[in-house]
Amino acid sequence: MNDRKTALVLGAGGFIGTHLVTDLKRQGFWVRGVDIKHPEYSETDADEFIIADLSTEAGMAAAMDRIFDETYQLAADMGGAGYLFTGENDAQVMRNSSLINLQLLKALEHHQATKVFYASSACVYPEHNQMSSDSPTIAEDTVYPAAPDSDYGWEKLYAERLYLAHVRNSSLDARIARFHNIFGPMGAWDNGKEKVPAAICRKVAQATEGGSIDVWGDGKQTRSFLFIEDCLTAVRKLMDSNVGAPINIGSSEMVSINQLADKVISISGKSLTISHIEGPQGVRGRGSDNRLIEASLDWRPQVPLNDGLRTTYAWVDKMANID
Image (cartoon, one colour):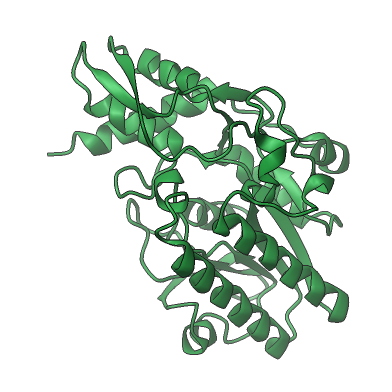
């Protein structure tokens, strides 16, 4: 490793983690990736990849056996609305993710390591502030009084407090990002944990000309979506800054799920209609409030939604049509 900076990426087998490893390598880091599984859709670019259950003491000890210049904590039990909002996975989501963070903080303290990035979520925000599809309230300082719409959101908010408490009581230097619907190629698309962009891309890719795709609810619920490249740029800016409070990383451009589906259908070149069916929907409206990140990090998304969807659709279409 010589004098190269070192980075530890937990959750390196997941969508954002896979891309983050590649980005850190591009920046010149020596990278160790750790996850309970290898990346599913590509080879890892990590210098070293360890398979470990990070919710256990032994797994975390294998992952963090020394100090790294930067530690990135993306490991979590999570998925899309079909996984998080049915209520069927709440216990394991809260238990598994909490154990990972507790084990990591214990390891950081043991090695006297300092700089850590924690991937939180827009799901921490109060449900009652997101009942409008047109004007949800999601500025960072509106997270309290706490009332997330899911146990996944409660666990993320608890973890934020864990890291901030350790910052106050130790030498830990933490950066916390509340991710808003990060999307792109090489993410879950057909295993029940896929998020909306990948799910819509899959449905369109698998639909026959003149057919239809299913959308949960009336499709008027709104979200914002951030392409992975913009996400990685924001993470780097955050890590290089002195911003210690949780901050939104997302796009402020909200679209309805119907509009998202129409965009993907247009990209595909197919003639398809939308059928609305019952299914978990989450909050009525959610878009990233970017005032703080624009002011403190001078960051704004650079990849238009259509461009990101075009890249993502091409990848999902290829995966869906592999013999």
